[in-house]
Each structure stands twice: as structure tokens, then as C-alpha cells.
Length: 320
Image 1 (cartoon, one colour):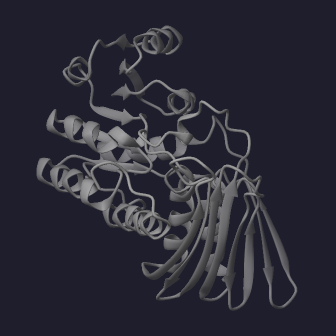
Image 2: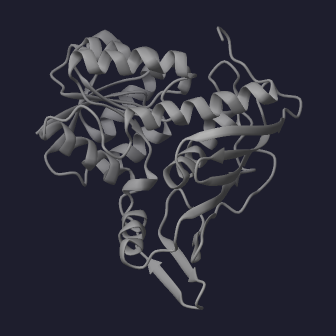
């Protein structure tokens, strides 16, 4: 039985617990949050020990920590957990910038512990079925990716709008788009970005295009428009549409140059975080210290892409 501790008891932690219940031989042992009342409510609903501090949680009898705080503390808590000898599954984005992430990855390597950024799409059944299908019926080399999401329904008090908590559409939405572009096109060789702030300290809408060794991507993210949320992947022999919401993928359409149309439909269960959590647990059990899917280098490339996009639109956070 793998014992988890959770740092942060907000909305994403509830989705994590929904998924953890579906993962064999894994359970919640302890939880802590900056707001004591949220911890008591959380353990009252899911069980485990309500911890009075991070140190209390990290000294508990746990094997791994799921870090579900806002991005301002991801690196800080990752380092604390690794120094305490715990494996770490950290919500995206893994850090504020590349300089902050690098010590986390170096420490995980030095300690011989598993560190993985929580990036859910590649573990969904639909995404895996799509990749498997293309092995025998390919669309040819991929040269273009277009993806994005813009949502208008965040309440005014949502931390997505907080500069101090590392909000903004690039940091809160674009990690998914960065993953998709890198997964299909490889490392970037150039980036151009534009964004608007709309009276707030953080970007309310941003668009950036990237050049890769294998092609180009056009990506968008925002809070003051309502976007479709699908993704397009274009190859020489056809193209793929991952239907909305593509980051929780359940349906895809492949249209081939010869006129064939293939529909893939793979519903997901338990909120979807169960798939990446199961992968994380299997890595621990097999003694691995890095995911072969969300590698440390991929995490580096994702945060570097977001950092460059922020730099170009003029969004820097305290200490940068």
C-alpha cells in the first residue's frame, strides 16, 4: 500500500482523491493546507490525518506527496518533500521558471527519488489509443499543431487572477498547450508571443506560436473570451481533431488524405487524474525515479516555453 500525503486541499485535490480511490493499493494518509478549515473538511471527507504544518505532514508515515498548491509554492514544497525522502507528484506548472525548477530536478536525482510533474492528457485512454492507432495507420510526419482554451466563467476571486499566486492564462492554461506542441513536434527552436493584461497584473489572453525542428504550433489561452478547447494535429497524410475539452480527451477524429475518416471514442472515469496517479504509483513500485512519458527534460522544455512567452508579453513575477 502506497501512502500519500497531500499538500493543498483545494479543488484539484478533490479531483485527485476521486482518482486515487480507483488506484489499487494506494491511499491517503495525511493532508495539510494553508487554511486549517479546509484540511479538517478534506480529511473529514476522505480520511487520513489533518496535519498542523508541512513539517508535520512530511514526518508522517507516507511514501509520496501530491503537491496541489498554487504555482507560487510548487518548487518550495517539492524541495521540502524530497529532502524528507518522499517521492513527489507536483501539479503543473512544476515551478515559476526554469531556474526554480532545476534545483528540484537535481535534488530528486541526488536523492534517488521519483519526481513527476502532473500532466494528465497523455495518460488518458483516448490519448493512448490514438497514439497506438497511429502506429499502424499513420498520418505521416506531423508539421503543425493548433490548440488552446479560453474560459470566461472563473469567478472574480479565483486565484487564476492573482499575480502573487502566479496566475494568468499562460501559467494556468498554457502548460497543457505547451505539452501538446512538444509531444508532437519536439523541442522548440523559436517563439513569438502576444498578450493583453486588461487592467490586471496578469495576462488575460495570450497567443503564441512556436517553431520546432519538425514544424510549427499556434497556441492560445485566456480568461476574457470563451474558446472552443479542441486541438488540431496535422500531418502529411491526414489530420487529427481531439475534440473539446482536448486536455480531458475522450473523442478524436482522424481524417486521411485518401478520404477515410476514423472516429475514436474512449470515455474516461473518476475525473481522469487516476490514470497519471496509477502511472506514478507503478513507477515507485518498479524503482524508477523519472517518468518515461513526462520526463524531467520535458518539464524543463514546458516551463522554458512558458517563461519565454511571459517574457515577450512583459509578465514577470517577483524575484525574476
